[in-house]
Structure formats: structure tokens, C-alpha cells
Image (tube, rainbow, N blue to C red):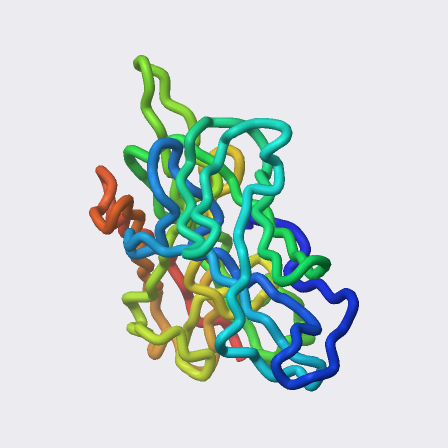
Length: 260
């Protein structure tokens, strides 16, 4: 993810049930915000940053009112943040993470980074040409590559003045269509994973605009026959809730049942 930074802070702990002892910034709705636009979630809905305040027992103080601010205001004016609502607007295109702070009282503060990016315009991708041969026994001890496809990837792009560049730090949603697994159930015949082997359906584009997910196949369940079948993945990329040009992208990888 492009958004990085410290998510929790503690200082001068209060002891009462309504006294702040810690503050935590929730994960941002998106790892990036388009310059000239407001921070939105993956569905394109305007979404503020949110912080939670805890007492010394770890209970959330529901009526706490944290303040939000742009922590790098002394460097540039790239972000404007409503101090009460947490709504974020990107004013200038600058490189690197820009820090947002949430504060409660005079000493409790937490920081998290957000990227400012250019608007993504289109997306494309290609299916894998090699065939995954499954193998038994099907256990995690065989390593990440056993019974897993290579990454099925897309490239999210930005076009400006005739030049195409990769759109970085943009969320991409993946869904397994064949064998169908709409909830990405890890007990199903196949499911989506990240590069560490963890179940995951959303990736964020890297600096070149690439994002992808692998498919983990359960060798005893897929393919069902002795021939070659295909896992099929749909990648969806949107801006303000509307699909980019080329979205959704259909990606496929062939799978052959290996010898027992």
C-alpha cells in the first residue's frame, strides 16, 4: 500500500473512563487521493479519515472529538483537511507520502501518510500463457508456488499530453469467476491470494501502475477432471464509482491436474 505511517499513539495517559489515553487512525478509505478531488473509498464515495480515541482500559470514547490536520503544512499546501469532519481535498500534485495527523487534547497525536496522484484513465491486462500443474500432497509446507498461479496482473494508466504513464497507488478489486468464489472463501476449490499467500481480493498499484493477485488451487478439488481447465479472474478498476476504460478486465490461467 502507498499509505504508510504510524497508526496509534499514546502520551500523558488519562485515568478516567472519559479521559483520552490513546488515539488511533483507522486505515484510510483509499491509499491515494486524486489531485483536485476529495478522498474517496474504492466505490467512489467521498469518505473522510477517521480516528478513534481510547481510555486507559482500551474502551472507545464515543463522544471524543479528535481534530484533523495536514501535518506537512510547513512544507507545502498539498492537502486541505476539514479539522472536524476529516474530509480531505488534494490541492497540489507532490511526490511521496503526505502526512495527516489526528489529535486529541494537547499531547496525543497520530500520523498516517497519503499519496496524491493523477487521475487514472484506463486499464488493461493479459492472461497467463503457461499451465499450472497441481501437485500432491497439497499442504502449505510445499511453499507459496505449489498449486498457485503466477500473478494475474493489470496495468492502470494515466494519459496526459499524449504520454501514457502508470497510475500508482490506485486500488484494484479482483474476483474469482471460475471456479466461482464471490466471497473468496479459503475452503473453496480456489481462492485469491497476495504475494505472501494471504487471502486477498484488493491490491494497490505499484509505481508502474501494476496490480495483481494469484490464484491458490486446492489440488483435490480443481480441476475436477484429468484435462486442462482455467481459473478466470475479473479485475475491476473505477474512479468516482465508474469503470475506467477497459474495465473490467478478464484474466485467465490454465490449470492441469497433476499426478497423485
